[in-house]
Length: 411
Image 1 (tube, rainbow, N blue to C red):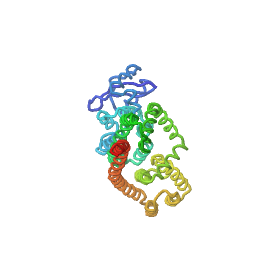
Image 2: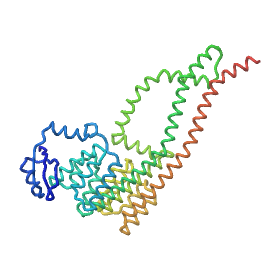
Image 3: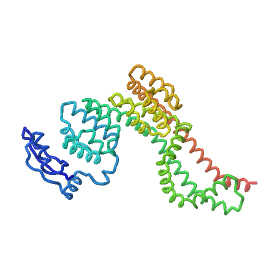
């Protein structure tokens, strides 16, 4: 169906303009008249005009395909909820927010959502047309809020969910930035030493005409291999990364990789706690918003970020479908700690499951923050000592023949 650009006046004489998808001008006029608007003009947007209109808003193809940040979605949910709670009509609220949105994909989606709502669509159905921007988590919570008449409070819960998730992500990233930078710099320094400096020593040692110590010969041989295969390795690395990403997109590849992550000595427990926190926060938010528990489990299962835990939650979903509890299959999975099982069991028995899940999420988010902080404080000195040991070993290996030669000259 074509797009139409319309201009009209409301009962107070204010100018109202926008776009609408309809079968013809008569349908647009009929819809506007039902809203009590005085129509001044209705014209069809031709293809060139539509492209120009979108490009004027900064909606380039590259922007439309980019991902919307959680912070942008959080701000949008909170502001829209505040406007609705203050009595501002939904369409007016979207119009106001559209002018303030900095994310091009989100701004484009809001523009299309306005058109759909003007055409009589619900907010839930309008959001559902933009799956790359609004997830099923968004869509179903909004649908529940519309049905119960509690849309402002549901939008506030969505904002709180994204705030908690974003804060947890920022803590993990910020705590691991310094160790990552330190590792990168130290690794680069070692590679420069092995590729550039070791060959200079190797030429000098060759002029001595003496047999090199074992560790020195090993370093020299390693330097030669690294310099010989450095270019092919650099060229092959993007191919290996591409193949690895393709494997991760397969069901089997993702399952094995997620299982490997959970079994890592130090970081495995961290990854498990992050998945549990996401599960508890998401399920608690959806249940408190009125989403049926079976449907909430189906959506949350796709958001935990680990295939092993997703498989365990599939069993939980089947148990709930058969009229059983959540706690029993959680315990049988062997993945969820006893504390989580106990809290869920108490929540089911007392009818306060959503509150219990939010308590679990808060507990594990604080635990994750503590674990990340401790890991960061332990990794920094460990990496400094390790890298210092490697550099010291290389220096000793390079100067050992010189010491040996000086000793033989004195004798």
